Image (cartoon, rainbow, N blue to C red; front, side, top):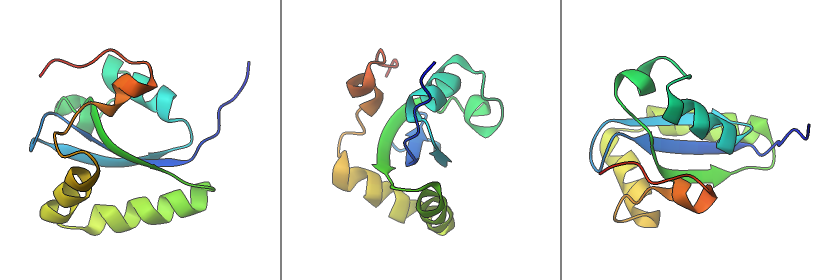
Length: 104
């Protein structure tokens, strides 16, 4: 079994301008699967955050964790602006990674 190691910071949302969550992972595909199947309990499952709306790859987990911590301290408007600069329609970016789209 090949272990994918790709440090990423990501934002998932329940819908456009809905509940958002900022996270960090070393395997974005695996983490998205966990969020979408509900096997990752907690805030995201409670608030139906399954739509990948922004992500950023990093060279190391240390830099990814630093970036995640900074973004988590931002106010909501700053986070929304970050998403909208790269993804103005809040499209589900996971479809480009092989996932089926989540319902609108």
